[in-house]
Length: 119
Image 1 (cartoon, rainbow, N blue to C red):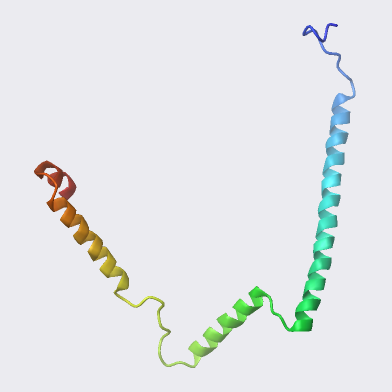
Image 2: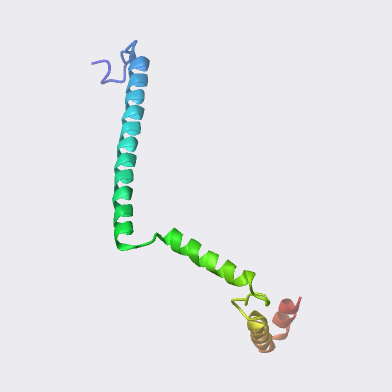
């Protein structure tokens, strides 16, 4: 009755030890679960590799590595430098356009607002 009214709880002298054992059991179960799933994933990967070998399919990493090697091989024998993805000058035009749009908007603002934007 004392517990229900907010009285002192009875303390188990072995509570800390039991809690520690419970935490250890949880850690051990978690490690076992991770090991089980790692083993299952390894088995799946072996099966996947067998399928890849059977049908001549390559992993994405292998395809990317081969593509990169091909680019490097082409660049080694080339007398010219590799082409850039974006031609020079393409990005600069957009910035100029944005500035001209901003200038156009500022023209139509009242005088005090124009001064504020020009600073």
